[in-house]
Image 1 (cartoon, helix red, strand yellow):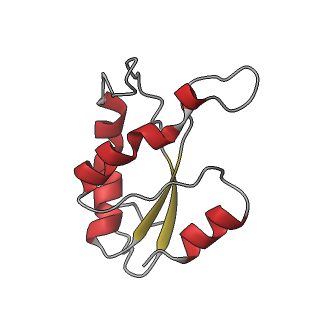
Image 2 (cartoon, rainbow, N blue to C red; image 1 turned 120 degrees about the horizontal axis):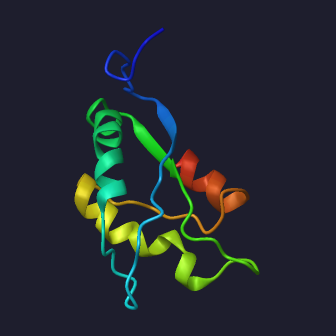
Length: 106
């Protein structure tokens, strides 16, 4: 069995479940990026090999369905900066938008 360090992601798409349930302030700015830092080596390994990373996470615990304050879209700019590449965001993990975004990864 290969470990992450032994696997070559060149030309591959990796689905990665990350814990990006980070605290945000009233302006939707991250106040503690510890969880993002923890996932960074894995994501950078995939990207540096020439692969694409599809990240899955959640933010908060909405009680009555989707709420703006629980959207992961607030993390896109921070993630784009951290990984040095444009991070794209799908409003949902199923449906044509998600399928198209995943298919368009290089």
